[in-house]
Amino acid sequence: MTIANILQLAGGIGIFLYGMKLMGEGLENAAGDRLKGLLNIITGNRFLALLVGIAFTAVVQSSSATTAMVVGFVNAGLINLTQAVSVIMGADIGTTVTSIIISLNLNSIAPLAVFIGVALLLFGKKQILKHIGEIITGFGLLFMGINYMSDSMEPLKTSAVFHNFITNNSNPFVGVLIGLVITTIIQSSSASVGILQAIAMQGLVPIGFSAYVILGQNIGAVMPTLLSSVGTKVNAKRAAFFRLLFNCTGVIIFFLITRFTPYVHLIEKLTDNPVLQISLLHIIFNAGSVLILMPFSSKFIKLTELIIKDKQGEDEALKLRFIDDRILQTPPMAVIQSGRETERMARIARDNFVAAAEALMTGNLGKAESIRHGEEKINFLNNEITDYLIKINKLDLSDKDAEFIGTLYHTVNDIERIGDHAMNILEAAEQAVNKKKKFPDDVVRDIDVILQTVTQLLDGAINVLKNQKVNKEEFLRLNDIEEKVDELTGLYNKKHIERLKEHAYSTETGMLFINTIIDFERVGDHAINIGGSLLDKSIVI
Image 1 (tube, rainbow, N blue to C red):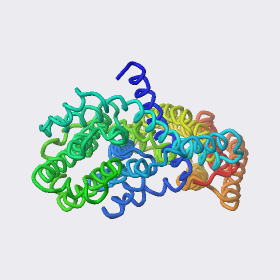
Image 2 (cartoon, rainbow, N blue to C red):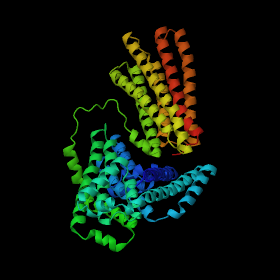
Image 3 (cartoon, one colour):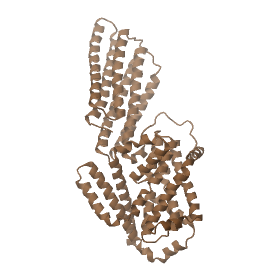
Image 4 (tube, rainbow, N blue to C red):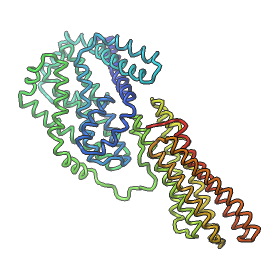
């Protein structure tokens, strides 16, 4: 091969990988909201989770992306190890879709597909048309890349060195090693199989040798998953290690089948098309491994638990529960998980507010340390969620998702301010206790009334955040509650002045009361901001 051939091969690989990525992103964006419902299916039975793994990987065109996402879900505590392994097994089947597409041999229409796809990307006015353009363009580029790779290797037909290496090499481990190395470098088993199919188009690789290369590719496919588990919690590491055990066991089984049975000859009898033969080898290995090993998945899980043991004393104080950088590979999922983490932050702020108000009314500071710890969590989540939203904002999002992420910036800020007001109320409670200032019973009753009203408003706002949408009727109901908070604030201001005139409490006690009421009113303002932002942008997720 000349330098020109090598450059053509490199360019072909690049076009192929970009085409596969563009097609996957287009399918993912076109599926949009439908992908978000997958999490509920994952948490169902393991057979549904298996189907989710197949479907999701067929869409994103990458088992590595799917398994990295699953590792992220396990790390965030969204799914357990049993659910995760079913999705991982499904991902191994879903990854065969690319090899099926390549075996269709649609090379002649590739330039037309690129033309149509680019036209839709440039001139399509609706977002869905642009996503379809991405799919068609990626589809065309994938086949153009295959053509470039195949053409670049044509000189190998006359290379005696290459022919001697392929025909005289009877060591199957060499084929396994080649597949492992190429896939580890490229970080994609789909792309690695595509390259093998491109070589097969020139009739350069016998099917017997290809069978062993495919086995090596399926070991190499595990490497991105293992890398994605670095720095994760124990169960996430176990999910990644499960894939290594599962794939290696499948490789051992099919190595023996390939070596000692007429398996390869049966494939040759099915079709004389070398590209389709490789696709069949890929499909049979992945689907066959799942069928053979799925009944023993619980045994694999126990083995991973024996090898990767629980860590003692793992710090649980400040951590993210729903978001993880690995989920960023799947933007629709990252968007919905951001909403869940923000909802969690809101519930912590709500509980802090209620606990601080109760401390003020009762003079019991038993929860003071817990409230401060809650404020520490709120500040931690404020920083982490904001950083995560910045990362998501750089991704290719649908208009609806981009709008929702925009609202979360403001929502997180509103929640952080609610936490600050809760701390103000706690400080007022501590000041009252330290200075032995006790509120009269009627003042405590007034505080309790506005507390219940603001809490009702907060709960409504958090429910809006949980559903990630709000209808007009619900917002009007929340608005009525917020107006009641304003009315109570005005009423208590008047009562405060009357109490001072009547010497019902000291000026210092009165200032504690009225400043606290202002904090309550501000919490109500921030709560209505949360519901209002979702209504104004008409977001439905």
